[in-house]
Length: 426
Image (cartoon, rainbow, N blue to C red; front, top):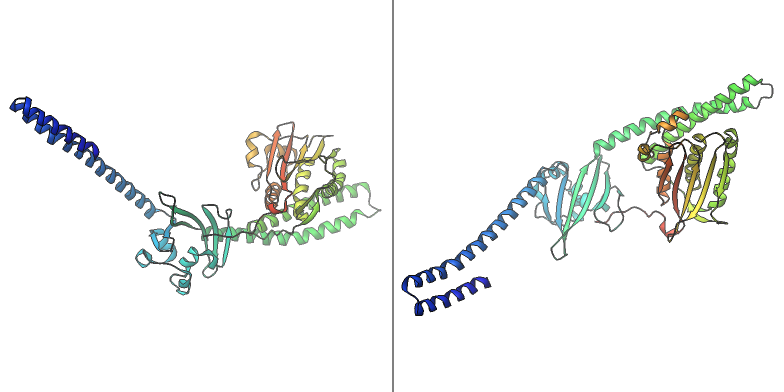
């Protein structure tokens, strides 16, 4: 605005000087300029302001259109839980119209209202029957899976903050995705796999026990011993596949339980390698353990689950190794962090770069592995990754095709880094 006053002032001075020193026509021009120039500036400023307001209005209209037509429910509310936004998808999911909730405060006391109970439990997940957090506490956006039993509903809820220009908290926005049908399909698949695996495990265990008993018969000829050995190998592989399938269903249903206790990782790995020596001799392989300078290494772990993960990695290292090759298990402290790095290195067939990212997916087996051994479930590494992550570590792989593979994983040596109980913050 100051620039307008400047022009008016300058114009007034020019007009006065023109009246004193110049002829009439020039005086007229000066007066016209005095009127038009500031007004032109005002007009330009007003045009820009109107255009900015128009652009903002158009942008908000577009944003509103996007929110309204989203397939996911969107609910925004202020710090007092007064509903500010409630789109069409939210109306369908919660069975209430936006006219019934917009501008109204939703508190835990309204959970007794049958028409609002589902909405209130979504806004206050601590009131819901089951909540599993998928993000770290106090880190936004917060993501959680919320389950309801009657009727059965499954939601994936993402919660983020609404912040003002000055950084003040204005409220929250929730994006709710309905996963009920998806969860039901997964559960049906898991139930089928679980029932089939349980039905297979009992007769396979009986067959395996029978073959083991026959193998101890001293009267068997060489041909009989060879047949029984082949049978034991086949039933052993089948039992492993069945157990892996059961493990997968338990992981996906959140029932793959862990019982942590203090173990000495050095003695723990020594025991696993001692059990692996029999198979190593059959494959003419050498097993080595590089303890990384540790005499003992105490940490918290589930010995059964961690033993399964280690055995999977060592079995693969022997199975896909070259003749008269080696397997080396190594330990190394992670620099400046309270973790230990465990490695399992082989001298085998290796893995192509294109297959590296898929290794930890369910049922994936690299072509180089299938050439060496046709059978296999492709579930071992998926289970191993889950076990390591549940112990608070990470797992990755490095490999050169034809030169060997090394799997690395970390485990926390600080008890405070153990996985925390899952919870949800609104």
